[in-house]
Length: 605
Image (tube, rainbow, N blue to C red; front, side, top):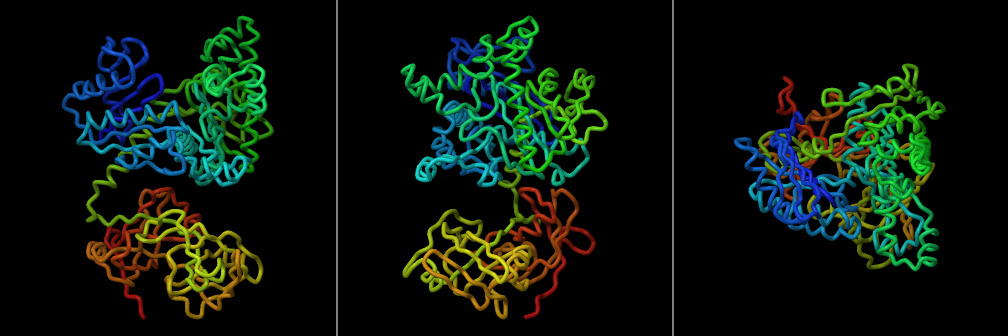
């Protein structure tokens, strides 16, 4: 597929038409000086720039986007991918854009006031110009949705955190995800076996701890202001300083915000601007402020690298990317020269001579005996966005005649009767919805209880609603051994002669005589799906994982058919971890000859 990727930024617009499989560019476009009277438009197939007749994002976009059609000629477009900076906690993956999605992006503008409004403007104008194409939003924050709670919470009053959604989100996720995958491929090691620290260094800078393929820490927070020293952003700063400056200088919040975002960072330290190349040049000429800017920049980065190695209990590779990370041997040297204690040993010659290109997007600059590899990786966020757009477009246009099945991981959870809910939470208590589940009519409730077994207890286990006719506790094998119970592998609902357990809620406790099971891996499907797949309720099938990290087949999978279901295979967390399943995994039913059909036998009643 040919995908138009649009990155509508605060001061420029970048666009490219990309082959979603190879990454080849059919066309690139860049609009600069958006606030000038006549913004400048550059097309890759035209040497002379084009002058836009009027100023501003909207005027420039309305003038430039139709020109893409002209420059493409006979090449066909299949979709449009949009970079969106902030997805809040609403979006943990790319999504096809609808009116509701646009409204959600607009509602998140307060979290990224410099980016989300112009991202949304680019979406709406592109939808007018390319009205017949599917449009997909790819969020900078989505990769970091895997961070644990301890990494996302600020130590602020709970009522304010909940009222305003005050938490750490992280940014540059598309780039961090892409270069981590590239590093793993270069090292010829499954990313599920690697601990990688990725350093995205440009005008905006961030660093991420990627533990076995998942983001577990990142330096940017609720906004892109937190963390490393950046071009014009301060990064970490003592909040007390802001209170002090506001009092002593009489500065209003708007002025302080401008200072932190536009006048600080390398620009504030050096006094000469935010371009690292200029700062390095001035430092060699004796400018003390520029020397200080480089020292502070590298010191902050090295401090974060050490912290993230501690978070992950070690590190296998440290990756540098972005304009500075890819092109500045000075910054790579200053950052890594004292990381021997992590097993990262710099090779000065490799670092100095390192050049990245389309043909060589990854290069090592660590010594041969370095236990931790030092890498520079050429990031390609546009290609990453194009790949995600292709995936979403294919899902949206897929006709369910090819037997592909989404695979979901089911964590420990509890189904309760209303009678037990009354005991645990109070007479007449009704479960409240936290989030809808993929299966229609079901939801994850806000309410949680403690499981108390013979050996240990597990706190804050979530209840799924609505209430059921039977009490059932679904756990993994790991949970079973931890609690000290003997939970049989069963189909959901088959709880006869299963293990019992004590449940403790805020208002009372209940001891179940039975109901604890390890859920049999299974597939939900509608009767219509069952006809397509040529299976019946309670058939047992084999499912081969496609697009996985390694060849894998799940046997002994139970088919469950109901008009209330949505097509999806469920496995527990132990199986998912053991299988090293990536996000968005899918499977196909297989036959004995390896074709995508099925192997089935009838479950005996």
